[in-house]
Length: 440
Image: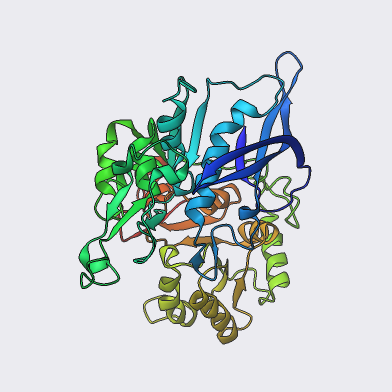
């Protein structure tokens, strides 16, 4: 069973008729559960197997953005995801199924949006002898996003407590509380009302869960460091005995160059000849010069500082113009992504400056991602930090060489090329920090 907010209408999703109401901030808030059965195959006895997809419907989730708009979070996100936490825990107990889930379940909570799940499970359900055998695994996908909520929200508003979240008391509040240093407070210490107190849902999730998992083994180590912990390294270190890192995977059936429906020609590791045709098709679709022997470099990712887009901006002139040290400038560059406005402008300006050689695709479609991965020669990922990353795994399925910064999951999933080794397997580690890692 998976449980997500119902942000919109989805194909095949129907109302289950199951409704629940949860008391928060002095009111009762009803939710309705929607359901979709997704078959996955059959078991040894010929019975159909699959996954129950559960969607929590409530008006607070029906907005243009998931978490916010125009670079600002919604002001009621604490309420929205607190309500979602309640509904998620209740789902296995109330949703009808062929085989009831009951109380013997493991909740896998993801990131700050579900940071209240282990709190509610412990402070409410277990307190009343319910879900006593249930456990919660908290997954950190990105340590850079904490889910921070000042308490009080403004200097003139009253403080909130966990009782406002529907809990009996303020038990475990200390696991979530965070006090900002004076230099990080709005008043810089000049106003006594500005105490700097806040709650961090990510911190509470890490401290309250039964186990904590990150999306790559190397990222597990990085979040315990001063540089990679974003101020929460001590919380991560305190759970080191119950902290592990498991590398993300990809759907190898969706990302299969022998039968990918989104690419013009199919190829395989045994016969990669059609990859050249995929490159030619990509050049035609994006308006690039038809040069089969010119290296085609691609970047696919969120347009944000974390992804190192500004690093590409810094070297663009050198990359396209060449130098006297051997860089020829004979290269094509395709960049696709959406995000911060200044980086969107960079993509547009780069394409305008090098028409026919550079494409700045502001936006994202899965179909174009497949075409770029299949047609490119090199995929670059200059991320400053990367919890896991998936494009580098896609690239290796399609014979596209990933050139990545040796951080997080990039370091775990790309084998560093050593031209002096008899085989790539002799050098399993990626490049050290600050240098790229090129996988074969």
